[in-house]
Structures are given as C-alpha cells and as structure tokens.
Length: 112
Image 1: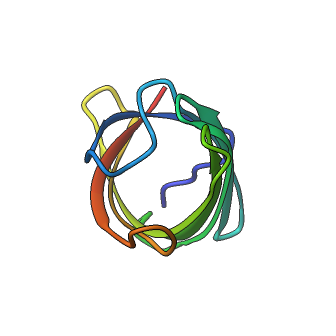
Image 2 (image 1 turned 120 degrees about the vertical axis):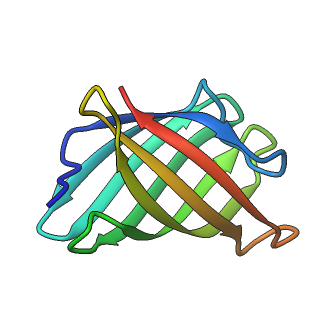
C-alpha cells in the first residue's frame, strides 16, 4: 500500500484554469487512510486538503485555498498514483472547482 506521510509534492503540469504551478509545494500527512496536506506557493497564499486513500493508493480529496486575489476557492480531486522508475510517486489528478466557474482540469504532481 502506498503511504503518503511526510512526503512533499510539486506540480509538473496543470491545465490553464488551475491555480497550482511549479512554485506550489504540498506537504502531505497520513494517519490510517486519512490524508491531509498544507500547500502554498505561486498563485496560492494558503491551501489545505483532506482525503481518503484507498487500497491502491488512489486519493479522493476535497481542497480549499486562498489565492493571490484573496479569493476563497474550493474543489474536489481524484488522484491516481504511479510509481516512477526512481521509486518516487507521481499523482495523476482529475479535479473540479466547486467555486468560481466550476470548470474541470487535469494536473500531475510528483514527489520531491
């Protein structure tokens, strides 16, 4: 089972309607199957997520963040893990804003 506790992730790609960038850093914690993270950087002043990790390491999460326009943004995300050749985790994410324009997008983040 994949365990995310004390892992650090950074985005490597995102669709244009997303707010994360290569400047955003995610600090993951996990207890049991409950995942939490704090993140900031780039357009994001402060963000938090909470999710559930399944037996395959997939994550069903909800997030909220304050961006550089001081807007509170919220969304949902499903992440699918891939173990890279170097043993680190790459997460393929499909997300949707539940605030703002409620658009959808795709991103990839990698363990640092």
